[in-house]
View 1: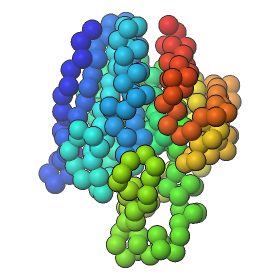
View 2: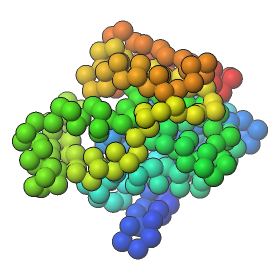
View 3: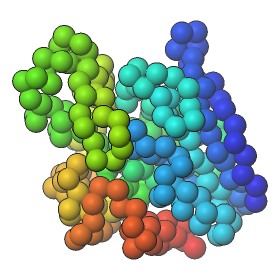
Length: 260
C-alpha cells in the first residue's frame, strides 16, 4: 500500500483554492476511511495520523486532507464556511475514494460528515457510506454552542468588523469566528429533525469536554435513528480525545465498523 500527497483544485475563478490531500491506497475489495478534521485542525494531528497508520497496517485505504485555510491547503481561513468546507470535502471524496467508506469526523468534522451524507443522498451515492464515526461531534455549533454565549463585545465585533477573535488553549493564535460563518451555519443546521443516515453511527464523547458538552452528543442522538447509534462516553475525556486510551477507542470503533 502506498501513500501519495496531491493537491486538487476546488471552485472556479476567484473561488478556486488548492486542497492538500494525502491518500493511502488499499485493496479494492475492502472499505476505506475518510478523515474529516475539526475547526482549525489539520491532517497532521495525532488522531488523523494514528488512524492512517492503523489503516496501513490493516489493509484499508485512508484519505486525509486539509480544508482551505488549514494546514497545507491554500485559501484564506477567514473565507471559510461550512458550505465552503463541505464543498471541498465532497470534492475530495469524489476525487480520491472508491467503493464503501466510513467517515470519521472530529468536532466540526462531525458536522461536515452529517452534511456530506445528506448531500450524497441527494445524488444517490449515500450507499457508499458504510458508517459514521464521530468524535466530540459539533453539528450546528455556531448557532447552538457559540451564538447563545456571545458577549456584547463579540456581537459588536461581528457587526462592525465581520469577525471576532477568541483565545484558545490549543495554540498561540486566537480562534477567528466570522459573521459569514455564523450566517452560513444557520443554512447548514442538521439538528432540526430526523437525520436519515442509512448506516451505523458511533459517537465517542468526552464528559470533561469544555468546548462541546456531552449534552450536545445526547441531543444529536435524539435526531438519529436509535437502532443504529452507539454512544461511548469517556468520563475523563476532553475535547481533543488524543490520549493513548482515546486513540485505542477510536481504532477499536473503526475496526468494528470495518468488520476487521
